Amino acid sequence: MQKLILAFFTCLLSVAAVAQAQSIEQQLQQLIDTTPAVGLAAVVVKNNKIVYQQYLGYKNLETKELLTDSSLFRIASISKSFTATALLQLVEQKRISLEDDVSKLIGFTVRNPAYPEKIITLRLLLSHRSSLNDSQGYFNLDVIDPATNPNFSKCYNNYAPGNGYQYCNLNFNMAGTILERITGIRFDTYIKQAILIPLGIDGGYCVDSLASEKFATLYEYKAAENKFIANPGAYASRSSELTTYQLGRSTPLFSPTGGLKIAAKGLTTYMMMHSQMGKYKGGRLLKKKTARLMQTPLSVDGIDQYGLALWKTNRLIPGLTLTGHTGSAYGLNSALFFDPSTKNGMIVICNGSKVTYKEGYPLIIREALQLLYEEFLK
Image (cartoon, rainbow, N blue to C red; front, side):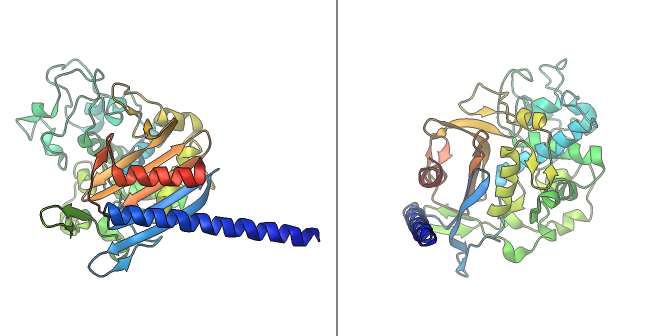
C-alpha cells in the first residue's frame, strides 16, 4: 500500500514537472514571437544540477533547421572570462603575477602618454581599469604598439590607469596575447587544453577546427527591411591568415575578447565550475581563493561591479545579486549568471532578435532570465 501511495505521489510530481516545463516553454516561445527573435537556448541550474534546458526556434532561418543541444554559438564577450581563467591559472603556477607590467608581458611599451610613470598591470587589464579604449579598433595589436601606429595615444583615456573604468575589448585581445607569449602555445589550443578538455566541453576559438554544421547562424535585425539578415562574419574562416600566424602577435585573430564557439550546455558546465569556486567533477580549474578573487568587484564606479572578467549585478532579478557576464556581437545576445551562495544559475543565448534595451540589458535576455528564475529558482 505504501508503495502504491509513493508511486501515486511520484506520478503527481512528474505530471506537475511536465506541466511546469510546458508552461515555461510556452512563455519563452511567446517571448520569441513577440520580440521577435530567431532562436533561444536556455539552461537552468539549481543546487549545482541542471533542472531545465530548452532550445526554441531556428538554428538557421533559411534551411529551417531547429536549434538543438549541440548547436554551437559564438558567445561574444562571455569569452573574456575564459581568457581570464587561463591567465589566473598561470598566476597560481607563479608563472606571472597580476601586478606584472603589461609592457614586459606583451613585448612593447604600454603606457598612457599622459601618465608615463603609471604602470599598467595585468590586473588593470583584466578589470577594464587600464585607461585603454577601443577608439582605434581592437582586432590588431598594431593600433596600440607605438612602433606601428603614430596615433597610439588615442587608445588611451585622459585619466590615470587604475583611476577609472571603461569596458574595452582591446584589453582582452592583449590579455590573450600575453597568455600565448607566456605559454608558447597558440591561444585557441591552450584554452582547449586548459579549460575545455578538462570540463568535457565541445567548442573552441578556432572556427576552422570545429564542425561547421553545428554553428547556429547569427542574425541581425534590419528595421528598414523588417527582416533578419545572416551575419557571415561570426564564423568566417581564418585558414588563410593562419598560414602567416605569428605566435604572441597575431592572437587577436582568434578574438580572446569574444570569439569562443560553444553550446549552451557546455557553457553551463563552465558556469557550474565558477559557481563552485573553481571546482568541477574531475577536480579543480582554479583554487577557491583565486575563483573568489575573479568574482570580487574592483570597479565600483559603474552600476555593475566588474571583477576580473566577471561582474556582479542586481539589475536583472529584483532583490538578487548575481555574478556573471553578457555577450553581444554579430546579432547574438548571451548571458551567464549565477548565485555562488546557492549554486543556482542560468544561461540564455539568442542568435538574433529585434534588440531593445532595458537598464543596459537586451530585453529578450532580461525577460528570459526573469521567467526562468520565477519558474525554477525563486
